[in-house]
Length: 312
Image (tube, rainbow, N blue to C red; front, side):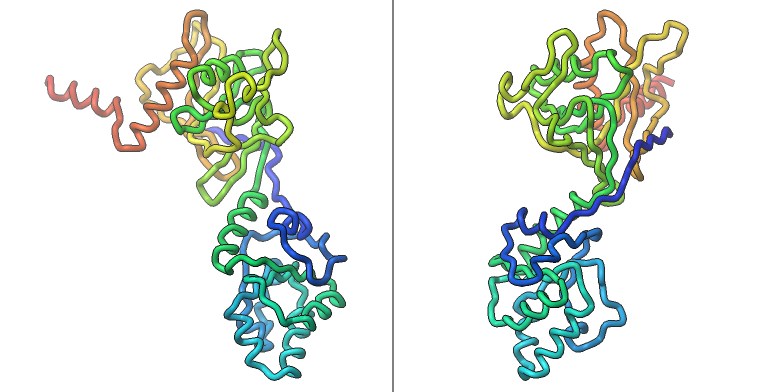
């Protein structure tokens, strides 16, 4: 197994970025929109509203839904004000009110004085939490940049690597012409989503573009249509293009299975030697189809060995 580490890092986003992304209404604490968010986990306060703060999740975004509002308004006004002030004084990164609920003008004043952004959305609590968690999971995921090209072939995410000038972009172009999709060229951003899922995407600037030596930069969407590109894909295979070495033995049976590690995720690794006359794009298509067969429990090598056993 080969491990590749190229500057993987943990990201942060600001509350202001969330406000823009989800069109949230700012009710108070606008000066604190620069607060940073580091955790993808969300929290709906329960015991905190009763005054118990021993395990207060300071790093999480807090949400107040219908259930929390029902409890808050069951309190007398004096106790409600006291509980809200004690709660906000713990300084969560921000508090989001769902369902467009109203009636907590005092909470807005407390948030303003304590520097805690108070935000509001009209969406239902569970639906908004799902969207927010998915967004945070991607935005805060550990990530790294890899020099290569990423394509989606028959629904299989393939990261193509190799030395500069070996033909990675040209192979990607051939695959695009065959109806497959480009994710990113030259710089591929890898994000670890969960313990085993690795997502590949572009950095924004290189979206839709392919750099071809001798031709220059080309816009794939304008040449082949919007369906020729996609924003991201799960990485299922790491493919290395290497110059053909006549003195080296290349496994044609697939006996030795190899993997490569990006951040904390292992990905199946294969190497394709380059020499005149080899149709690399077709080999990659076959590799993608073969990977899908293996995921469904079929292994050509096992089948071949079984046939040999039957002959004996």
